[in-house]
Length: 139
Ligand code: THU
Image (cartoon, rainbow, N blue to C red):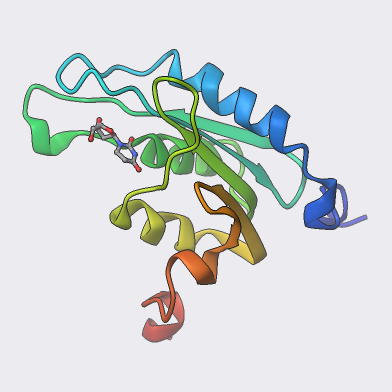
């Protein structure tokens, strides 16, 4: 059986509360001594894994890694694959919109119909980054 059949089949299968809790747990491990604005992110992969990330800042501010950067690193380190569902939260645990740069990061690794829990409710990747530049442009 293909691994991609093991994960959630429809977006209704996603336990958004559990995914948000995973993002909140990751947020608590953020390294954000400069902004004091911890962020946590969590995603489900198409094969049913949960990957998480948190922001990791640096004294050289521009070197900061957003939570989504950590999450994508975790995705690749744990075997890659495509993202199915995503949420990120701020230091209070409230849902946060991914920054523009990180929408591009997420777009690169999106699965078909990838959905994000946002401040406007559930949105597809195409809704939060319409007419995106992506790998298909380089094909
Ligand atoms: N941050 C993220 O981790 N992800 C986002 O999508 C928005 C911003 C972090 C970067 C920085 O460590 C802190 O939030 C304040 O900008």
